[in-house]
Image (cartoon, rainbow, N blue to C red; front, side, top):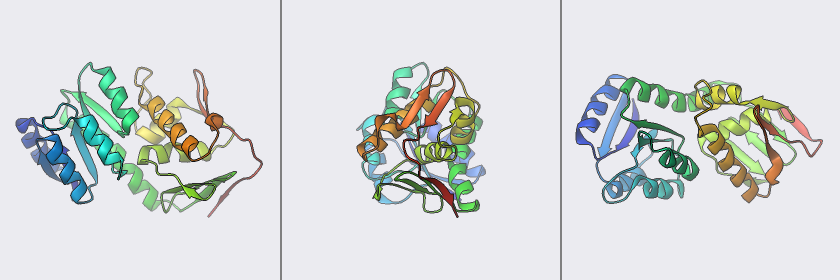
Length: 235
């Protein structure tokens, strides 16, 4: 069973999800305050953290910021329905995905499995090292290097960069990226993919990459721009 940390002040919801997820192979620990949940998040590794935005003690955004300062653990944000700003802010801070409340537990389970599936598929596929110029991605070690220096990415950001590096110089459609990275069909009203691309750009830029390395092709998708000749994939 995989260990899930659920941080939400709705005691009834936590009880229901603990039972439901328990029947589907997950062991759930709950916290009903943001500060308490943060301490639990820091005390041990988790397969995933389900994090509500509105929390006593410390709001979910601040909890997420502090988690991201030291960990790339999978985080799914639980937001109030209709609060698009909350979702955008959460993705900017580093949430892997979000789900608006109220939600069907089956949809939450599907989102969780899609996020966790990336790690599982990475461990069962043939390890590959992708290189584009001085950018290197190791699928086995889940590691990205820029000019020899490590770039810390979330699982979503890693999968996004991997998809782009597999087709350097070519435009990868939003539809293909949504399926490969988020595990669901592309929704033009869902800003998740765009926000993950934005965070990936910022992290690569901070590591010394050009801002234009990941280019938006309006109405189509994204492209890893080639400004060097050295492109290779080796086992």
